[in-house]
Length: 68
Image 1 (spheres, rainbow, N blue to C red):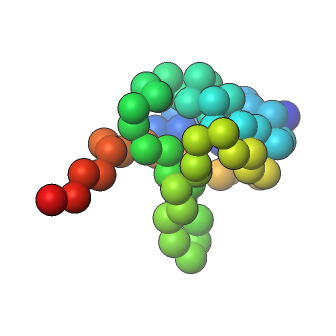
Image 2 (cartoon, one colour):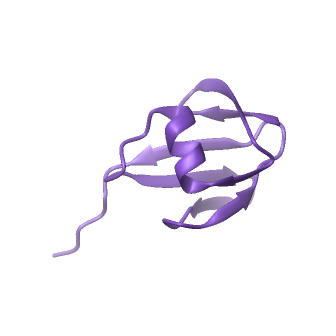
């Protein structure tokens, strides 16, 4: 288990987590975009994907982007 920060709250999640694990731990609704913040940029966590979570990783959510 790793302690990550999701929308400003410290949460324990598995070291290899699915997007659903992170959403559930952070109370993020399915229609919102999940983003992992890193030192060299922000990265979208795609639906159905797995990501490695390290101690202190930061995740946030944002509204879905609609072009046009």
